[in-house]
Amino acid sequence: EKITTIWNIPSRHVWTPLEPGRQQRVLAQLQLTGPFLLFPAHCWPHKNHLRLLQAFQAILSELPPGLKLVFTGRPFPNDHPACGLFDEVAHTGQVVHLGYRSPLEMKALFQGCELLVFPSLFEGFGRPVAEAIIAGKPVVCSNTTSLPEIAGEAALTFDPENVESIGRTLLECVGSPDIQKHLQQAALRRRGLFSARLSAVKTVSLYQRVYDCVYG
Image 1 (cartoon, helix red, strand yellow):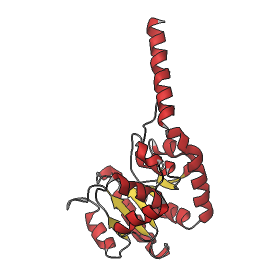
Image 2: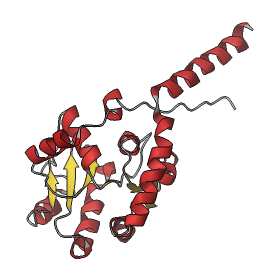
Image 3: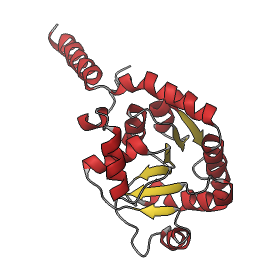
Image 4: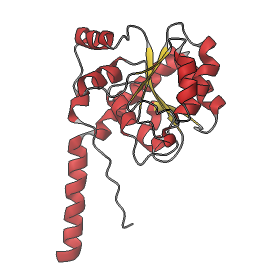
């Protein structure tokens, strides 16, 4: 009863949609002219790149032709668990790593992706999930730690330690326009939970309550 949770606030720029033509131009400069799944994350081991790559490789023949898996963030060092498999799958042309990108490019990626996939083993919050929801995008993410709370009904979830579960859930979402539409609608209903105003009101209310307890 002494604990109050106030969510993190995604950057202000993610709320502003890009004009479609500009979004397409930015993505074209990144050599993304077709559909893609997005996983924006640093290459820390708990982000779970290896199992995602294993799952993607296993379902590659069942995915729509040309669908890409896009990574951003720090590229894999040579000793990273996912490095060897990434090089192997990248030869298909359906997995790309874009490295660090500008805020404008990240906005285009979030708003232009088919869905966000987020297989992290643990998160304190999971800001990319919130940013995808603000963009009105379907989310496919882990069923662990904070992620189900952040994603709510806007996501399909999987066991991040089970490669088959990751692949099966990805196929379920990618293969069903009805599921994608349902998740998009849920995202649009949920996006207001991440507003700066809501967090500010909760923060001021908390300070007022503490003040009243001490000095009231």
